[in-house]
Length: 371
Image (cartoon, rainbow, N blue to C red; front, side, top):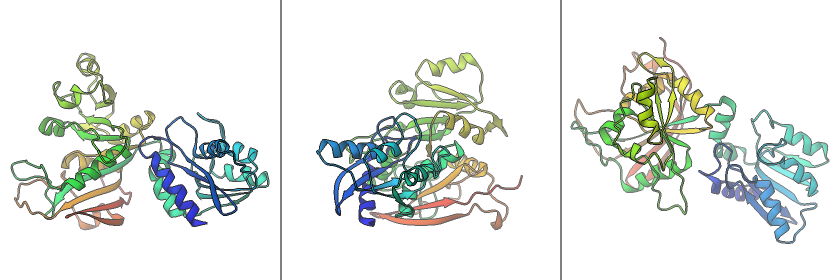
């Protein structure tokens, strides 16, 4: 049973970077203990995994009647960009359905299972649930909160520095770690930095993962309270090719037009303590169907993001180096906490070695600092 779901999971991962804000889903049709067809959700707006699996079954001239279906996520039962998957499962006279994750979407949320059972189909849920849930942590967050899943990513030395005292920071980690970063830029919908990062580093913020057959550039978001982004920076010079958003509190239409004429979208957000209100910005970005953001800003933006409570995961790349320097920047700036008990707590940490570097991924326990 689990081997077929593992196969479906591996299929689902092929949709990484292409299906947002939809979930990654894989489906496998099994008859007499053998896989006769399979499919996965390939692109946002295209057929779902189940329908692709049945299409392959028909193309191969095989019948799915009496077969088992393994699917990583509860089949949908509503009309969206495609018809309900429950319909085609019933039409093909599937005998049993094995499901990994329940769908938290209120339009589905148990209704898909109920419909199948009401049509005499035997349904088993929770097959490799933890792995299936982990695959779609972004979708689960977005569909329930309507705001992006935010990953705070930074690279630092063993002594916690993200730059030398001169401000130089290229490169802290090795090439393999940097490739991993580009793979994540393909995986997640957007990448966000503060305007100071643009001014100081003039980054491109694109995806250059050569090890992938095909890549998608992330949407680039600049947090720029007063519209100070240089008009000749790399990001603006390529805004006609790569979707670019400038989040600001500036409502001056003449200044905004300078950026709009270069292909940027302006998103005006509320102001809080003299800066962009990140909670309000997340709502606005969610309305644009941006389901996930990698935060690659500096230490001040990192602090603001943590303080506002928008961060769901932290990615810490650690290189076996020591920079030293009392004035060298650390990964999180800002005011900081006053007492150890006020700390932002991380949990479910996983450590991965990447050549000489280490990547620690941790979830963030949701809490707010006292005002």
